[in-house]
Image (cartoon, rainbow, N blue to C red; front, side, top):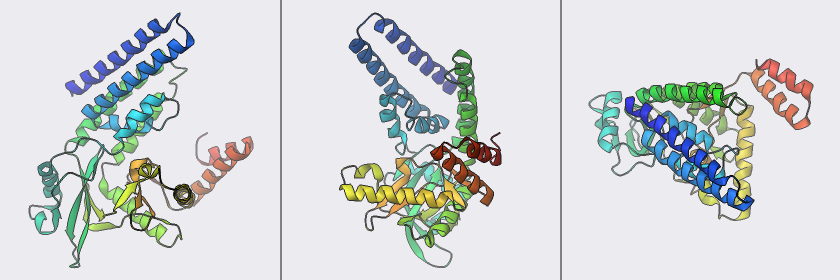
Length: 337
């Protein structure tokens, strides 16, 4: 923990010094020179932050992933931090197998074979490998297994405390810019810690799978294999898909169809029993065979009551219609006021 605290302090010091020096250099220069100086500063800081987050991992990755989708940050940060969405350093296969053995027992190899080779993806909390499953009903199926990184829980605890200290410092130094930062960090911490229990994620995904079966939408969710669900592993259907960002050069009609499918999906789930609020590109695949949209990663999901769904619908309607009265009514129903 000493290394992690020290490293975070070092990162803050370097970024702060770069901003201070750029501000000094930019004073008194022409507009174009100032713009160029700040662009270079942002590019250097963004790459430095990316390297630091990759080194630290843990909660910092979650915060950086969220920051990558904020339009308020300079473009350089969005470009660099977007690379963190599913490309974190992976654990060795031996470490993965040790986690699986702790979860399924010493004879886990009779029920599951993890394919050799690099993982399909590695993120903050877990990584995913191709696998062959022997189900209790006798079926043998090909799928993927999501395995939690060792020691991730302890690292998250240190990172959350450190990020809370930084948030309080920034809020004290610039309250006009960071008035809500402590609350945002606390909310992010609660969401991230809840993701550590994969049984909850599996239940969320199974509920989403069932709700989409008869929806008529061109969207689906991978099927869960309940025989291979514990607090630290999840077995599920393999999807041979491409990330939505890889289809930027696809025909215009194909892109429109995918965007329409995504909007329809969120419209449906917004009024359904469960809503996924982690829709970054790393969690959205397009099935190579069918072209259907697949939504992954249900660790961050909310189950809403019928009254909450009505209140959220009123909230969005009020925003669209600039109706202050309806907005206040919706906020009161949701407990915001």
